[in-house]
Image (tube, rainbow, N blue to C red):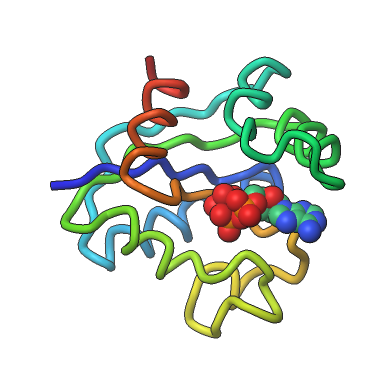
Length: 133
Ligand code: ATP
């Protein structure tokens, strides 16, 4: 089975949505293998979001992810990467995420869209190493 890294970002943690996200992951049939609340320092944030360096929203992204604790988890199952991205919904919670998805049901803004999920099995490998060693 495949593994993916899921983060409940600071907005989701502050709104008390960790349980909601975990519940949707479990209802989909995916398994939780690790779960840890983490305070994110600048270095971890930069490595996590390396592909976005130079973009207009990069600094905003770093200050947001380092602003409050994040719930990091390793999630496992058949096609876990794509399966989690399906239940998360598109990046823009209004224009892209469909109702029934985490973002479609629970978020309004792209900058605070509750969750992160790895975008490929290769990214997942890299991100799981980065977050869980
Ligand atoms: P994630 O990688 O977090 O699962 P994603 O793959 O749907 O999300 P990316 O394009 O990788 O989206 O962007 C990473 C994160 O950066 C998004 O989840 C979002 O919070 C933020 N982001 C992306 N585009 C913008 C934007 N135009 N303005 C503000 N924030 C943005």
